[in-house]
Amino acid sequence: MDLSRSLLRWYSRNARTFPWRTNEPNPYVVLVSETMLQQTQAARVAEALPRFLTRYPTVYALAQATNGDMIRSWQGMGYNSRALRLRDAAKVVVEEFEGSIPSDVVILRTLPGVGPYTSAAIASFAFNKWVVVLDVNVRRVYSRLLKQQRSTSDVESDAELNSFAEARIPARRSALWHHAVMDLGSTICTSRRPACDVCPLTSMCPSSGLLVNVERTRAVEPMFRNIPQRIWRGRLIEELRKVLPGQFIHVNTLFAETTETILTSDDRPWFLTVLKKLESEGLIIRTKHFVRLAD
Image (cartoon, rainbow, N blue to C red; front, side):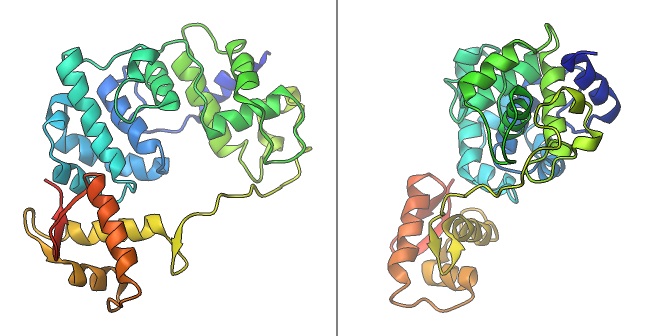
């Protein structure tokens, strides 16, 4: 049995279930879910997506949401700027495409917040377009199948992976294929401890059983008090979500609630810099002494 048939046969028995995976996918739901999945675990998205779709059941409803609406609806998802870009994308779809999500990868790339991966994912998962979809899991699986990798952290170039994928994606089964590869990478061909002994492709994989576990060096994040800046940003937004829409909170109160400490003269420049950045991204509105979520 060849690689494609083996993988799809395994997937037919082991496919994970998610609310965005259906026999007749809704392109709008795929757009929303893929935006959520950019930097959020699938399990969390699976919980949040139904609630989000209840509030914004169509692209038209989403296009009318204010910044404040989106930030409150995005609670628990992290990276709130993604919510605003998603709403902006919905506006473009309504204004320029009569409410229909484009199926062409090149056109999808023109939507706010839609990059190379997301455009390919929407084309494949929503429209079953024959395109190469590369995420972290897919890159890892393809790399190990392409040639023997020395360690669990090694991956090949996207150019090589694209060539490998193009020779194997079954015609008219793009969505099914990519779901299968992603599930294999998430559950068996994992980043640290691949379960080669139960992998359906182990007999065809030159890396099977030979990978040395090596931790990938992670980029150093901007920190404050040994906590990533993104965590502080998230805490600030979470506190502002507690304030009634349209009402302000004093910046000193916000700082105390966020950090559980007093505002010191040393901390104030950092804090004001964070607020300025959030304001420039359209997430908050502030005056000299007060702040609230954006409208």
